[in-house]
Length: 112
Length: 113
Image (cartoon, rainbow over all chains, first blue to last red; front, side):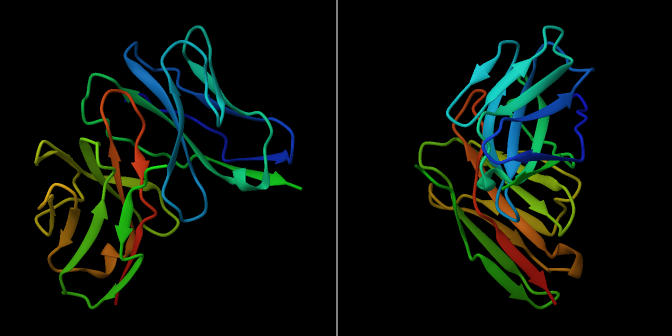
């Protein structure tokens, strides 16, 4: 699976959009981009995933660049409860095990 | 919303003792996983389980570890002879099929003393 690179930390004001970047310049054509988050010491929580097209669900939007070398997770109206470590993971769809390899992620702190 | 349930939430055990960590995955899910997170470190893959057998395991998952799905609902992780370095949060996860994301449980904090 391709390596991903994320900033170590980011801050966001409550109510504003949080835009979390991820670089995955070596991603291959059959690798999806997945986003999970981990609120302090809890189990990771699935947020969203995509292959080529932008995706949106009730939690977030995922914007993937046309060359697929980077993506951005958008939390449209961040709340204090969105403070967490956010993980961007590239995952090969051809492997049925879908083993997740977590990096250090981005610690997003939402400030009042 | 369906949940993955893990018990106990916290377990303290003596070094060398056996422990069994229990998980109840979501009922229609087909793929099951154990991950662990040592305090302050990354979440690490241990093992994946599908169709009643291990489909992949990491280097961490040595002969001291085993998994079982004894009754079609529970999914257990056994550590035969615990070491101090096994102290960690252990997360169970499951997913249904295809490209869907995992659902993780809230974890069991294992402390080996």
